[in-house]
Image (cartoon, rainbow, N blue to C red; front, side, top):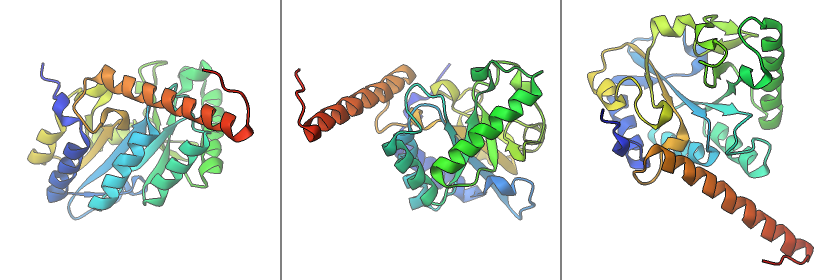
Amino acid sequence: MDYYYQDFTESNYRRLLKIAKKSYSFINVKDYRSEFDGKVIINRHDIDGSVHRAAKLAAIEREEGVESVYFVYLHSTLYNTFEKDIVELLKEIAGNGHEIGLHYEPWFYGIDEDKRDEFERYLIYEQQTIETLLDVRISAFSFHNPDRGGWTSFGNETACGLINMYSDYFKENYGYCSDSDGHWRYRRLEDVLIKAEEDKLQILTHPAWWTPDVLKPRDRVQRCAEGRMKSSMRKHDENMQTMGRVNEK
């Protein structure tokens, strides 16, 4: 199987956007049920591992005149949503004209599909947390690892007023292309965009996979982890210096 690791670079991402614009218009998630004259794309990013990578893609999209939706994940082990630098980057993404959504993980709370009340309670909690932190309004959520807890079968179009990106409506009315696990899981995005056979398309990407240079998926994760470690140590050293404290190495 060819995983097309060479596809996952910043320069190629820009190239793919240019290909997409030849046949498609990029639309806001809130307009997912609207009727359009031409073919449309909902460009969705689930931020599992790197807000810095997300901000880079958002900047490329702004330059290309493309709008996307970025789903924030509160339980990532590779970034802290409440960190000042991360909040500023997420606000920058929103300020570039992109939507912010919620990347929701029910199994974090031990919730499976038969615990609907708890599902809704934590969904509202996470929605309100992100909206307060970033001063935005959220209109949609996507599941993180929906296979866990049986959430792939949760076909409701909305929950607590939020659009469900895995709903039956999207499965029945939108084509789908995903880079989950750091490769094209079902079909290569470039092929899908060149053929342009579908009138409506949902593209899912994870920004951590898209790097300046070609890397294998595990190396891309390691890049995120090492970047976070270096940033944490730099902040520690800066804080110690600012407070005039001993910082032996």
